[in-house]
Length: 84
Image (tube, rainbow, N blue to C red; front, side, top):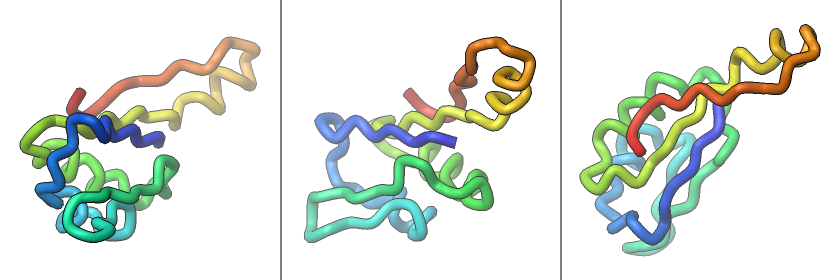
């Protein structure tokens, strides 16, 4: 799973940090720090965080199917889930 946050759109509401604290952290009152390659065990929390973002700044790409594609010689696909 890969996470991208549009930091220009993010307003620091911190809903993501509340719902997925192992992935998203607020530094000060407005600066968001996050792990763009969070562990798969955080998938549910990250999905909730993306859905709860008031400004829809979080994009989550599900990369779990890439291994099968690479093994078959096909380019990796990114299946987009979450909020744009």
